[in-house]
Image (cartoon, rainbow, N blue to C red; front, side, top):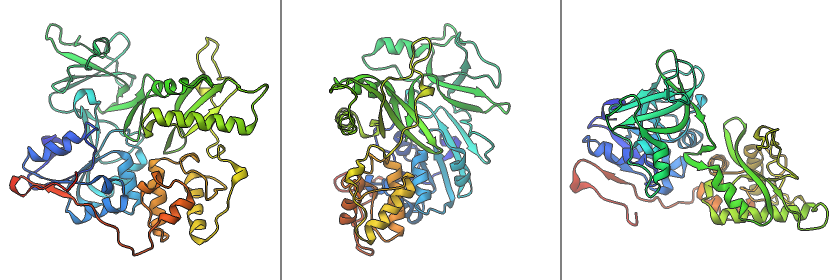
Length: 438
């Protein structure tokens, strides 16, 4: 990484990644082992596009690594770019449209790829133009990449196969899971007798004619959403813990371009004679969502849970995911309890919700997340609300998730908000300081 994408002693890197995400290792150690400077952003700053934009502009940042979600948040907060900035994007597939916007706003754009098991990145690619999907490039130093078929034989250029990774970054395995370790970390068939191993990523990829690697997604049902790796089976297990659930499946949908969401489909044991009425079904769905929220992290909670009489199946008995219906986001809100906006602020925020969530009607007591909102959409709403004179932050959506609650807690324009400290760690150790409480 010091050589390519490259870092100089004069660079200043802004660290925005939580320590639980492996890519934080690059942000912390690369600048400090290269004689460069490091600015550590607080959690509050990272969650607020406007404040993050201000950090980039006032701290003379020349290098920043972030997921596509964070870069999108910055753009929506009005960030116009920095010609001195080197942009590293990874953690999820880089959308072509986002890549185009970033190219015009920075000195150089790099797309990074690498599973946690191969510590940290495995391939890198400088993106100077976009024609179709964005490639993940070629292996970094001390790393080998192979694309193989089901028999672990190399595939020709243009033919999809599973991506295998070898080299110095390979992990020792999964702690206390020897069977999974043996399944995923295999002896290197291309260097027999060397004792080296390859990691089976489960990602589909292919070589392009120019030698760049193009990632095509997963070959199983593990998905990436907003930088988090999610096993859909874990969510299904949480749903099946309810005695109400007869069958279920969870999928990652993108019915609106650029807006991915987890959707759960369930068939329920009716607790009443005959078909359950609308209110009964609504209560069952609300109970299931509460169950999942209690058992799993927030990023794994489905945006919608759709009740079906029976899940569609293929002739061989497997669930037919292609036949699952498009969820009617917002249909689970109780229309009988609809309360229209009662003042100008509520009307402004309701209009923004309707535009961002794609709904025709929003009540002041409707729950943002039950209408299909998520953390990324909360950034969009907060930015638009700020432009309209309502000082909201994305964090407030998790404390007050209705229009009424948000309007009551919103600060008046011009009201000062405390700014959490940012610590700057440079190669001069005696000048380093950490923000209080962090």
